[in-house]
Image (cartoon, rainbow, N blue to C red; front, side):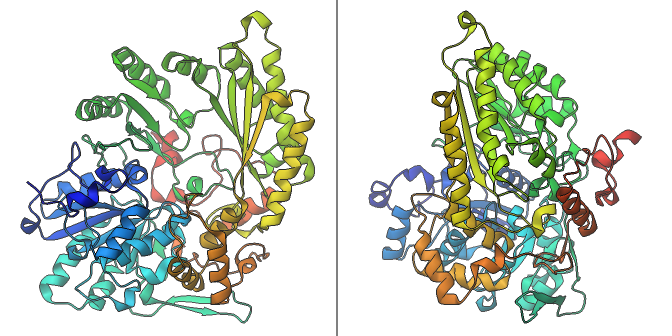
Length: 621
């Protein structure tokens, strides 16, 4: 019987105590004293969110298949337990063994979104690990970051010993072996870091020096030790079918955000939307074999007892064996109380036919992501979706019995005009009109069209990385234009409009495109009480504004400032395979409103062909 890290009286006094006790279905149990490396895998948000993350499930499964490694999990304690742990000096612990995180060899932190950065400092502080990497010794775990935000690690570089750039299945075994060898040889921590920096995909911030121009832009970014590469190359799995994947995923005791089996069908995206970081950094598209997926689906459902299976990818409609896979899942599982969930679909006749079979039509809504209100702006962002596509898809949906449509747009995109903004309301109105073209006796109640806008953040490694961001006031002004136009529409009672928080977006822009100078702001905000910034009820913009002022860091430098094509970015030392020349070309194409065909229509020479597989070579198979 495991001894729990939290006594019963504490567990009974906090929300959702099951977040902290471990012992879930399919949890791995090992003897910590019988392994060479203990790895604490952290999602720096509350358990309910972290348990839904596929990447950790994959790495958890992979690490624990190694006989010499025990991988355990740790999540950010919710605010109620955070307070108690500080008052009672209880160290942060891993769920499996309930042992303190500080006793582990590695603390791996997944970086899924910028607004979790203060939670990283919470995890370090509650673990008793010095916040700054330079202050750590062999008494502390090696702190390593990975995930999408590690493609610009600079704002949090000071807090990490190293980052893993790319997909974790590739180089981790080599890193663990180098670690074991270093400990066996009695190497210093610094010697180990130097050796680790030679492993493909590993970035050690302390081994690089940044110099700045007088205007604050970067002059140079260079390694300071021999054998440390100038460029860190992203690692990616080229043979997806044979790569590790959990046949027995963890099943949480409490309801997680995504309480279902997740079946990853492919990685990457052929579309090339110019605002989308994932579509660039996960290139090229690599598909999994459909027969393997059928087998995997059966095993995962059997080992978890879940009643829903979801297909995971950036654009499920582009998976070439989708029809075969979906037909199999419906025929095999749907009559047995298992729902099939199909996110990221384009709304066409096939998709609607499938969804009518797997969903309760009266309860569900359909989702489109036009991203922009006008065709001109959709061409600028390379969305590859016409108004005709959207209206035809809506008409088919309404004829099939749906009466609720969700639309996702962005405000603040490059070259945006008032006409583009008002186009959001006009497109919503046209969709509602499609519903009323159906004879009254065949309608399914009233129609509702819900349009939601987020505010645009130019992300690293996208063609829009050179773009200027709007200010908070400008974002809110744009939302008011859309809102006003919505109320002018004939069917305005059928239309609903929501918009994102502008102050959060501005902060996200700084954290996404920041350099090492931003770290001081993150630490200051954390010291002043910033925590769980991704949660609107916990986010306090005034804390962050005070932190920027205290640290003398100019927000506009990272957001609204225009960038020249030859500026050195904080993330330019990372090689994603997609060349900067291609991104420049796409940025220029955007200003010309020129559409670039998707990868299956024509190769645009983005650079990832050098990886030797995926969509770049499909026609040669």
